[in-house]
Amino acid sequence: MDLGTHFSQTQCPTSPADMLGDLLDAVIEVRPVAATTREWIVTGILSAIRRDESLDQALGLAGTGKTRLQAQLLMLQRDERLCEALQLVALDESVSTWQRCQRLAPELRRFMREAWPKTKRMSAPPEFWPAYKRALWHAARTDMKLPETASGLHKIVPRNDAFSGKKTGGKLLANYL
Image (cartoon, rainbow, N blue to C red):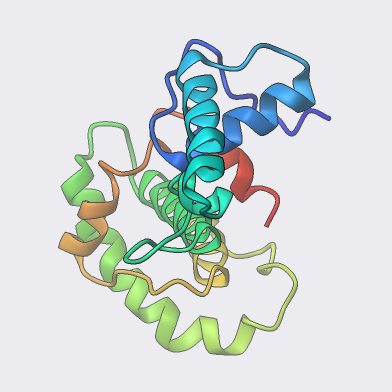
């Protein structure tokens, strides 16, 4: 079952969502699990048994003050689509990330005010829309609040690897939402 999001063994998953995604990918692809993931799952299972806590809490996937896994995955999807839109608003590769954010912010506000209310019940964005606008539609579809300022957009870039195209275990999990 190849979703085109194979999580490379050479990557070192660090977040619980990435490690869970790495574990899922390893099972699907019948490949070895990354060492950090193996250590995480063993430690989590033993902790759950010894402390009589739920496995999701022992693995750091749930608990007081933690965002639920589904919300984390929706945020990954949202940010990936916003980074895609940022990439698409540039006329050429010399445009800086900050300039992209400055270009996209007013378009995003206009989109949320005018286009989204009319199209949110659709199963897909209209094909005739520009690519950046279709990416915004998919970001809005996550139901996660979208940052509508240039600085808000700029903050998501370091948290997201969309510009590099790097796939993570969390992004693999997000594909199943």
